[in-house]
Image (cartoon, rainbow, N blue to C red; front, top):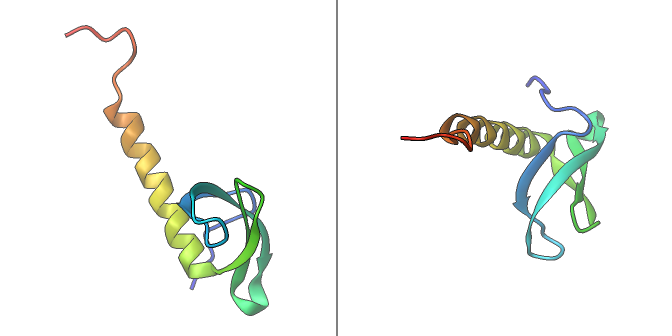
Length: 78
């Protein structure tokens, strides 16, 4: 399995500590255990499996690309 994520990557998911949807960022890689250290936007830190974090990062990047394409410029006139 190729590791596509890197430190500082962000994704949106529900925090298991506070139960709120929050932006998470990757703060550490534990390659021997196949886990990453993740920090919630509210300040909670916990471990997550690499494959789950990888999938969430890809999903978030895809959503951001789609929103960039779908949003017309502010001065757009029909």
